[in-house]
Image 1 (cartoon, each protein chain N blue to C red):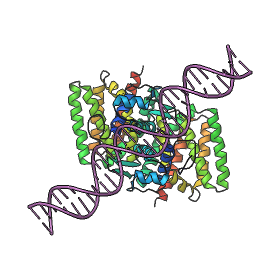
Image 2: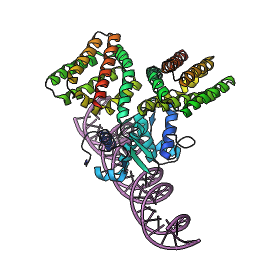
Image 3: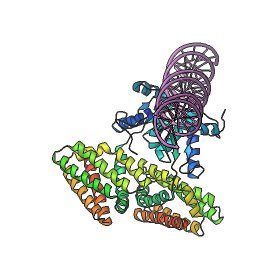
Image 4: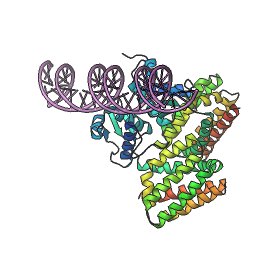
Length: 218
Length: 218
DNA sequence: ATTACTTATATTGTATACAATACTAAAATT
DNA sequence: AATTTTAGTATTGTATACAATATAAGTAAT
């Protein structure tokens, strides 16, 4: 479901949703802050309607919580949430690997390989922002190739939540190079359609990412 | 004066959201159906505003998909989705068990025990609708007691999706009694704060449920 | 001084009005 | 006959208007 261009999708509501979500993830609005519809509306030069609809979606994602007739307060993504998400991924991505290897298309597999090469290129150049983007895309393809709506939805959402953390993690000394190796191992297993090796490689990759993030936290 | 949408202390939007979600899960609106805002609004005796907000939330949950300026069509929950969800639960509930056992409060543990007793009571009486409700509550408490926002959110959502399937499964011969045994084993492990036993018992419970549902499918 | 009770204001919840877009089908052109 | 044009309609997207509720401040009563 790739949406259009720029900061969001086509409709105002969609753009606002993505913008607010970004602002919460990036900490512009911190946990405990209250969001006032009219204020946001004026800030963005739109009416309250699309703002409200965006907020309703944020509510469902748990990024804000709404108290009826009172207002909405930002929940945000806590450090604990992020650690939990890594643990959840560690439990889920083995499943994702199995399904993906069984169902991935030739085109998707090719894309994984291409991404891996590009990752190597940008890793050498130490352009880690680009590596981060490729990383996201890499895993997104795996989620997609599982052909499981529920699994894809969960993992994609979580991936977005931890985007910043992951980028920071990638920038710790040596991590990018190690991460590249892990991605190569994953692709290798995928190419061989080796389910066990793929599961192992992907889970190991998550585990290492997690460890690195935990180091980052202190 | 409330009209059309039944009563309750919540906002119209919230009631409509829950109602539409139910109607999709229960198959009143099937995959491929298109939802027209004005029609729904008239049907429920409200304006388009709360309808739209509810639909935006359904969209985020993936139960409908919206095509800008065109309309929204129902996605629903497919049989494949349900099977996937059981597989996902099998991967996740071990983690849930570990966290829950480490963090559950005395009150929550007591509630699990009480529910288990009630389950036994209603199972004997073969009042399986009641057993189903207790079942939901049982697992909801476990999710809650993990004290993990992300994990709770995922598992709660999925639990709702499979509610009907699970109830049907419970009504197959002998399953209720077996399920009761499994719940007792879970509570026992929780009482002993035995992480390994708890993980095993809960995962085994999911696995058996899944097997039973798969039998149900053919 | 404290409590209870108004009044004022801010904010959300809902309804309606208007604008933009997509679909349909009939009319016009070739 | 086929294609394009165009008018009309249905539906969504956005803005505004109105209603309900909550917060805060000030006033009266004890």
